[in-house]
Image 1 (cartoon, helix red, strand yellow):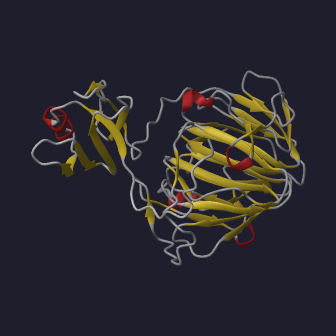
Image 2 (cartoon, one colour):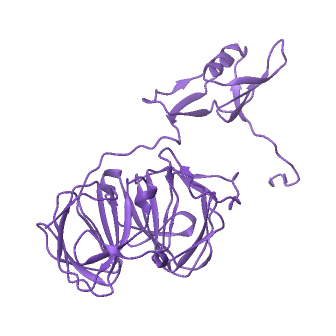
Image 3 (cartoon, rainbow, N blue to C red):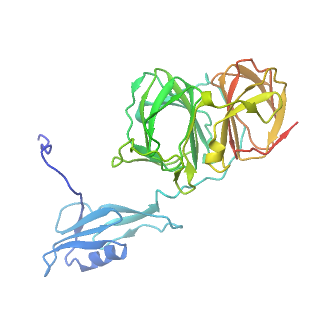
Length: 368
């Protein structure tokens, strides 16, 4: 049987249809106790159909309708979440955490070295993008770092969406990408060395990219929800750079590398170009590009923070974690360093560029 042609119809609502026993009273009382309000009931003297609304959902109860009992999922910010319950009409009501709640797993630190030519490579993810996992163990689910590739340039098959995150940043490694953000003016062109901070809940959409575009994306927690938002049109026509987003009120950042001066890094003989993420997150996190400042002497440091991640953007250097063999890192390689472990950086090539991401922004370090 051919599908019905509904292209001529204009819709102004939707209902979930559930079966209901006769009399309807016990089922109406059950859903009313869950916060649903009766909007329609027919007929009044012996109800056979009732429409209830609540929590952004419309439920249509029908006596005698031949459909499965169904399941509803109600979201709450409260904790703990109760076990499922069953309505008199057989509908199972399941409870879950709401989208506004972000669970941050306990940190499980480890030394992680990822090389660009490691087995596994890239896998295809959302919107046709290719993802390379830079921290496979995710530090217990606390952090995710991805090297993202768009092989073929042009329009990106993306949609307006947002993430529920504690922290998320995008650093352009190669090529360019055009993205539009909620209340941040016209679409922005991110080029090599530039960086976005995407605060929690900011609506955005990737529009187009160059051939072989590559970015490094870092987020906390590792597993976080991505929500589509078809009701929002971007750009919004507004530019509110000071706006805070999400529960923490973090601000959006568009770091332009070409407009940012070089300043001393945490080790003598090295320089950094700060992205401004530290200021926008009130010191929770920071990111910067690092290079040798002329001849960079060997630098040994231990950090005492939550997160320390170094990604080689260009050139190469040697890295020797305490108690481990000397490593030679080149473009695309990266290292995640646990707190308390001494790391020595040396033999940097003149063209070396590192992406340095930390939590907190001002990383407590001991330089040795």
